[in-house]
Length: 122
Image (cartoon, rainbow, N blue to C red; front, side, top):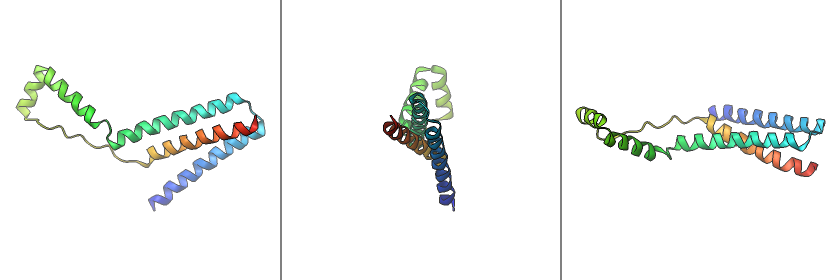
């Protein structure tokens, strides 16, 4: 049932993007608006990509290394970790969400639409 809800969200997004594109066609807007539309898609694509990388744990090793470095470089932190017997850092995995994939795919669709349609207009 959850897959059906996600697909409804994607269909609403594609419908909304299609309506914006049709509005651009009807109003005969210039290239500047298509550029802004492309930049919005690019921003969504980058935010979705970074969130996807964080969810998959690509940077967990760097976070672990940075924490270890801070523990070694600070005497107080070293003393606290010896007293508490903290030897291994267990990172908490981020919760997987469909919102990240939704942002990423919305950005991709906007980039594709804003790249293809102005080419045929001008």
